[in-house]
Image 1 (cartoon, helix red, strand yellow):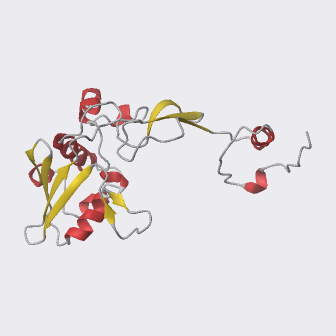
Image 2 (tube, rainbow, N blue to C red):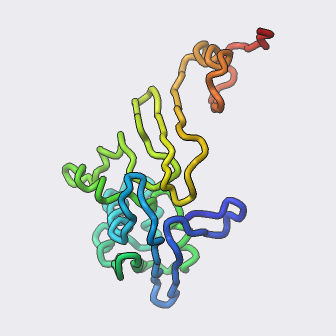
Image 3 (cartoon, helix red, strand yellow):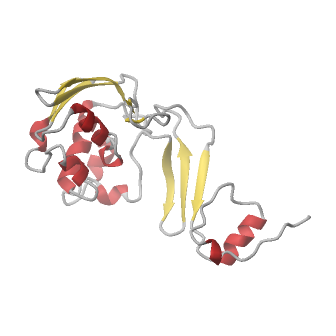
Length: 211
């Protein structure tokens, strides 16, 4: 689930098909899309949701404090998440917050769902696969990471099974070019199709090349 781009106050389903809130019981019953898949091709399961939330809360890395607003802590998270069937799970929270607040929290990046079948086998020293995920991706978003060279470049490849539809751009290369002169040369060669310049004052003057 994520905020609607046209109406950010509204939460729309992405991997979820529907959900039902019980304010009195402080629960959300979430039904997952039966055909939802990760970029790996693995089907999305309630176990993946439970693993992802347990992982985020237990590792307690920033910004896990967002999930703490629900009252979720490493010592109680296991009791807050329950599989109902192959496509349904219930989430419970202990904090005095409304279902609307809970939905907003679950639409934040820290609540992203990862593929347990990919991540768990790569866990080391109880890190829930955190070290492995620094160099790999295991989600269901529009793009999956094909190559990551720290401080140099990231190559993203379109995920044909993305729940939001296959992207029209098949691959994206994001390069780190710290040298202003090199950035200027790339621009003059027409290499970048989109870029963010953090310090425009560091970019040497560019002139129109009539050629």
